Image (cartoon, rainbow, N blue to C red; front, top):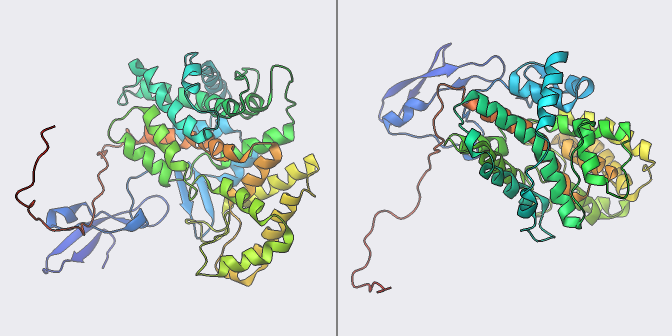
Amino acid sequence: MMDSKKAKLTLANGTTIDLPIIEGSLGKPAIDISALSENGYVTYDPGFMSTASCDSSITFIDGEKSILLHRGYPIEQLAEQCDFLDVSYLLLNGELPNESEKNAYVGEIKKHYLLHDQLNSVFKGFRRDAHPMAVMAAVVASKSAFYFDEMNVYNRNHRRLSANRLIAKVPSIAAWSYLYNLGRPFNYPRNDLGYAANFLNMLFSSPTQAYHLNPILVRAFERILILHADHEQNASTSTVRLVGSSGANPFACIAAGIASLWGPAHGGANEATLKMLQEIKNENRINEYIERAKDKTDSFRLMGFGHRVYRNKDPRAEIMRKTCHEVLSELGLENDSIFKLAMKLEKIALEDEYFVEKKLYPNVDFYSGIVMRALGIPNSMFTAVFALARTAGWIAHWNEMFLDDNLKIGRPRQIYKGKTQRNVPSGRNVSKY
C-alpha cells in the first residue's frame, strides 16, 4: 500500500519496511527498494521493465500518450525547427544554444573533425567485407589509445573535450567503415559543410566526382539524426551507463553502446525491415506474410511495426512518414517496387483489425529504412547511421552520470537456480602440465 511519501511492504516473515516514494517532474512515481537487500531480499524484474536504474533530466517518454521530450522540448518541434547540432548541444547542456553558443559549439566540433592519420592502419586490419558496425565499434574503442592523457572521467573539462571529439569524429568513422568495404579512398570532412551534409559528402563523393548536396535530402537526413539522437534508458544507453559506472574511458563506453545497438531488436530494426521487404518482394505476397505475422506458432514477425515503449503511435514515425514522402517525391521514386510494397504494407497495418487492436503501428524504423534506401545508403549502413545519431544521447547520459551524487558501479542481482553446493569427486588426476 502507498501514501504520499512511503510505500509499506510486508515480507513473508511479517516484517514491514517503509520504502520511500520518489517522484519526478513527469512520469510514474518510483519506489526506492534499496533497503530490501538489508532485509535479505532482492527484486526480480526481467528486462528491467519496472526498474529505474537512475534519475535523469535528459529525455522523457510517455508511451501511452506518444510523447517524446528532450529537455522538455517536444520531438516534433525539434525536428522541424532545429538541426542536429542544436539537439546535440541541448542534450549535453540542458538548453538550446543561442547564436553565439551555437557558433562556438559548431566551431569546436569542426576543430575535431579529422581522424588521427594512424587510424588508416587500424581500418586496414579488417577484412574488406567486415560489417560497418564491427569496424565502428573497434575503431571507436581504439580512440582511447590516442587520447589517454585527457580522459579523466571525473574532470568536467576532460568529459566535455571527449564529448566534442566523439560527436565530431564518429561521422568520419562511420563513413570510412563503409568506404573501406568498397575499396574506395577515404574522404575527409569539410569545414564548409554542415554536420549532416558533411557525412553525406564523405559517404558519396569521390576524388573523381563531387556529390551534389540536394537540400531536401540533406534536411531529410538531418531529421533522421535528430529523431534517433536519444531515447531514454534503452538497451544501448543503459549499456553506456553501466560500462561508464566502472570509470571506463568514454571511447570504450561508446564502443559498448555501438555493440549493443547492433542487435536486430534494437538499432538493427531498420536494416531488418528492409530485408523483410526484399524477402516479400511483391505486393501479391503481402497477405501471406500478414497471415504469418498473426500466426502465434510462426516465428516470423513484421519488422518496423509496434514498439516496446510506445503503446500507441511512435511520435517520431509521423515525422519520418512525412519526410519519407518528401524524399520519394523529390527523387521520383513513388513507383519503385520496394517503396510501393512498403506503402501497401503500411496501409494494411493501419487498417487491419488485428494490427489496430494490438496497436502495431509503423514505427520510426519502418520509415527511416525506406528514406535511407532512397538516399542511396546501403542496408549495412543503416545501424551505423543510427549509432552516429545516438552518440549524442549516449555521451549526454554518460556525462550526466558523473554529476550524480548517488553514482555507484552497476551491479544487477540474480535469482540463482543452479546446483547447490557439492564436492568434486575424489581420485581425479591433475595434469602435470
